Length: 165
Image (cartoon, rainbow, N blue to C red):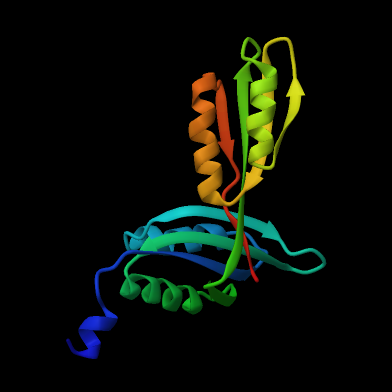
């Protein structure tokens, strides 16, 4: 097999990309437009201002083969409001989930399970219990699946945030 075919094989990979952008209107739509125009999928997108600056950090999780990931990075680098693009290899990833459970479910069971996923009960009303958990995305997916047995009324995920180790 020559290097060209090896480089452009069809193995799908998951890639976390951080993009530092000017904190101005229309930047988010331009970046999302770049993905949608080329048929690339965004699995997770989180955006927040960088404290004390005029920039924002976008954390994008996407999947594709090596060629697609390379193309995404090249296209991101061409956008004017983009200052820096990082393809992370060794990162700490976290995701947060809020889950609202009917009050008729066993509170102690919910608390024990939540703690196993770095979670806690955040609020209890006459009608519902709200729990949160913050952990690695795969663990949050597992936690959400486990909590389905408690018939959740609502589930809200934050999206992935990541930082290189």
